Image (tube, rainbow, N blue to C red; front, side, top):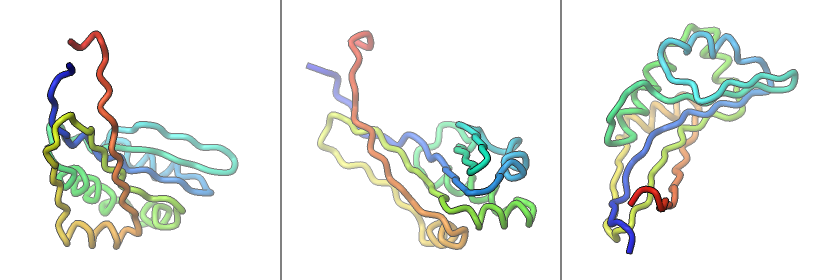
Length: 135
C-alpha cells in the first residue's frame, strides 16, 4: 500500500503568449520573478514565470506578488502585456491519497485585480504519482 498524502497547493505559473515580440516585457520582469521559459520567434512570443516567494501555502500570496510585479511595469510594457492574446494565472495542486478536500480561496479584490489585467485563471490538478524509489 502506498503512502497517505493530503492534496496540496503547488504553485502559480503566469503564462503569456502574443503574436508580437515580448522581449521588453521579459527584460522588465527579469529581476522580480523566476522564469520558467522565454521563447520568441518571427511569428510569436511567449513566457512563463513564477513569483520568487518561497513556502507559500495558498495561491493568493503568489498571485498577489505576481500582480504587484505586473502592475509596476513601465507603461509601454503594460500595454504589450494587455495586448497579448493569452494571459493566464495557472494554479497548480497535487492530488493526494486522502478523501479530505483542500480549500484555496481567492479574495474578491484579487479576482478583480486579475480581471483588470485582462487575465484568465486556470486550475490544474496534478495526479499523485508514486515512484518506487521514494519508499
